[in-house]
Image 1 (cartoon, rainbow, N blue to C red):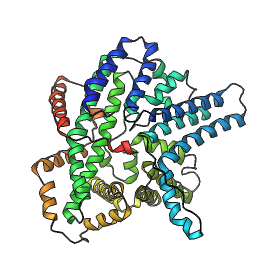
Image 2: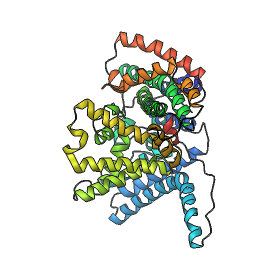
Image 3: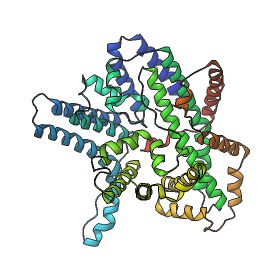
Image 4: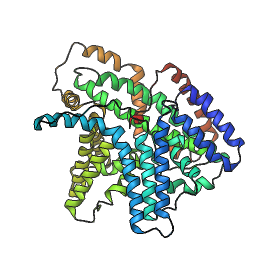
Length: 467
């Protein structure tokens, strides 16, 4: 189920809220788990079985790890079983076909038979809830959190539908206490409504139109240089407003049910370096990679060379987390190299000497190049597109048709709005902290306009559903 559909807005959400608030607190978590299973199983009911497997695995491994009198060998065994189970699940559904295809290119060189290629459907959101359950078991092993009070509470944490399929990646320690004791206040609920409306509007009014422009340009055979730059700029705005819009809706919906989860974006296109960009973009993923991968590898405490290697490994795996494709691997390597260069040169980096606006501009330009890799389905198309951005490819007769499609007053206006909103320091998460009547008056027509636009648009799920 998708937040931006009439089924969710007018049927699922009102019914869930009605039942939730009519139940005593002791039944609310169980009902939320049931509702979340319905939400998740709307596409494919068997997807729920995978999530239940991951939930059961990590819950009982957490019990083994935290059992009174458990030997260290038992605790390590429980941790190892959980990690292997979680990563095994993720590896099979997300990376088996990619691995088999690449091995099949090598095996004939050694006289070996090719591996069979299976048509595996990627369960939506598996990367998100796998990271959440895995972090729980690791934190229990580290003694950072106490094990879940009950299986019902843990199942609610894993399946909570607002952040289930596209994040933010919520750690158990963030909502552990809220599972047993949380407030349902009018202030929290109203700020949640405002966040949901603004996130919904980001997706419908900004991300989707920019997605139409990006699809047209990236789908063209040989776009002109100006068109190629316009297309990647449109994709930069699409992915930002699409993903940050989902995060805003997730946080807002969580507040409907009394939960508070951290924000996931902090004006990333205002970053003055790639290091700063990763402090602002998809914060829940970057902090997860830092705490569960970068620091265990040694972080920056084992010398400069090891630090650079750790950064490269983390970003390579971060790229691979986004998808089983060489474009994502190189996208991760690209960011890893830039992070290592910034760490190596420190304040002496080229753009560090520029004024603030210059640092922001250079960083945004570097991010734009990376979005080409992120958007293109293969390396060949990515190289061709980068060449088009610098005028390497020759123009075609269809270029004039592409220009007529993308440079319309409608798209140019939305592009301008996206640029203004992207390069300002306040996220909507901060905007709704202090709701006033003038702001509420603005939200109502914006929401109505968004709903009207929703009915005119084709089905368009969030970009991060594929991850």
